[in-house]
Length: 194
Image (cartoon, rainbow, N blue to C red):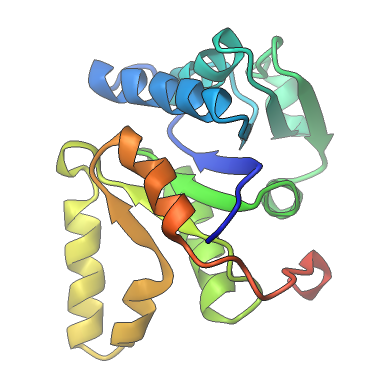
């Protein structure tokens, strides 16, 4: 069983999204905090990122934001987090998020969320780490992505066993059960290999 003390959450930064998604992000933060799990995220105060951080902070949780300088300059950083780490690039941000986390969770989001999620999946596929990854398919949000992966499997670009690199859950409450049921990582996950 995997023991998670810091969960990296990838999610959207848009506020013009389904209010249920914003509530789910807030609930993810709250439930993590209640379990003593630190939230690691992209550092923004807007959209689902802001809701996630606010939910954890309101429940007394620890929240670490990791944000590139370019976004700090645009004043999108969350001022209330426990720790804000400012880095030089988007690439460094993803590496530092990896280093600070025991597991990963993808809530609904856009291109940035896809980028982060697929990079961490690719690193796992290559054997660079074996930390748990959970895709949260709220209201079927990721159905078309999952269909695309199934199609890639049929076309033999993705091996069937690679579909086991992540778990899919339908509700926020199931994230933590999926993480607890994941095997403990065996690969050290040395970020210098990336």
